[in-house]
Image (cartoon, rainbow, N blue to C red):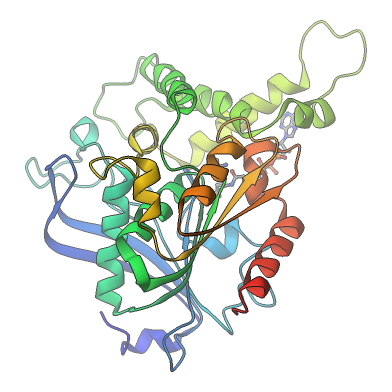
Length: 352
Ligand SMILES: CC(=O)SCCNC(=O)CCNC(=O)[C@H](O)C(C)(C)COP(=O)(O)OP(=O)(O)OC[C@H]1O[C@@H](n2cnc3c(N)ncnc32)[C@H](O)[C@@H]1OP(=O)(O)O
Ligand SMILES: N[C@@H](CCO)C(=O)O
C-alpha cells in the first residue's frame, strides 16, 4: 500500500499492514509476516506534513477517535478535516495485530505461550515499517500515553528529524522497579488461575480479572476512590470499592485476553530507551524533535518526576502537568486540561 491508494480519499479507514517475511526482534527471535491493524482518519495534505500519529496505551486499540473522543474527531483538537490521523494497534495486542493467539507458522496453531517477549523498541520498529510502507516522510506530531508514550519516545529516537513534535503523556524513559513490581503482581494473579497454561484462548480469564482490579488501583488515586466509592456509614461488608474493582476486572476480561496482557506488561517492564545506547539520559539527548512531556500530579504509577526526566534530558524539552485526582488515567479523561496544554505548546512554538 502507498499514499496513492484510493482508500486515502475515504475519511476513515481500517486497514491491515502485513510485513512479508521476517521481523527480527531485539531478542533476535523472528516473527514471520508480522501484522498491524491500523485506522486512519482524514487525508494527507498536498505538503504531506499533517500527520498526527497516535499510540494507544496498554489495553487500547487503533480506534483513537473512540478512546480519546475528547481530543480526536471532527471539531476536536486533532480534527481529521485538517490532519491525517493514524493509530495502529500495537504488536502483541489483541485488536488485530500479531499477538499470542495469532497463528504460529511453526505449528500452524496459535502461538499461545511460545509468543516471543517484545520490547517497546520492537513495537517502535514495527510502527517504523508501517510508516515506510505508507510512504510517510514527515510526522507532524507523535503522541502517546503510558505504554504508548514508552513506544513513542523509543520511536522518536529512531525517527530523528522525521518527527517534528513528540508528545509523551504519563510515561517514562525507563520503567521503574515500582511499575515492574505492579506488573508482576498482575501476572502472578493470572498465573494463579488454574486455566493458565492450557492452550485455550480463554486461559487465565479469571486471573485477568484480578490483574485488572490490581491495575485499577495504580490507575487511580486514593482521592478518586474516596470521592466516588465511599459507602454510607456503619457498613461491615459489600463495599462499593469492592464491587467497582470486580466490575472493572470483568469488564476488561470480556474484551481482552490474558496472553496479550501478559505480553504487553512484559513489554512495559523491559522498556529502557538507554539500553545499549549509553543510558537513558544520553539516549534522550539524541532526540532532535521538540518533546512535550506531560506528567500527572497524582499519578501513582508513572510518577511525574519520570516525565520531568524526559523533558530535562531531550534537546528541546517542555514539561507540563495535569492536575487530577484520577491519577494515572487522567490522560484519558481530563480533556480540558489536556487541550489547554496542547494548544499552549503549539502556540509557544508557532506551530499548527
Ligand atoms: C475495544 C475497546 O474497548 S478498546 C478501547 C477502550 N479502552 C481503552 O482505550 C483503554 C483506555 N481507557 C480506559 O482505561 C477507561 O475507559 C478510562 C480510564 C478512559 C475510563 O474508565 P471507566 O472505567 O469508564 O471509568 P470509571 O473508573 O469512572 O468507571 C466507570 C464504570 O464503573 C462502573 N462503576 C462505578 N462504580 C461502581 C461500583 N461501585 N460497582 C460496580 N460498578 C461501578 C460504572 O457503572 C461504569 O461502568 P461502565 O464502564 O460500564 O459505564
Ligand atoms: N487505562 C489504561 C491504563 C494504562 O495506561 C489502559 O487500560 O490502557
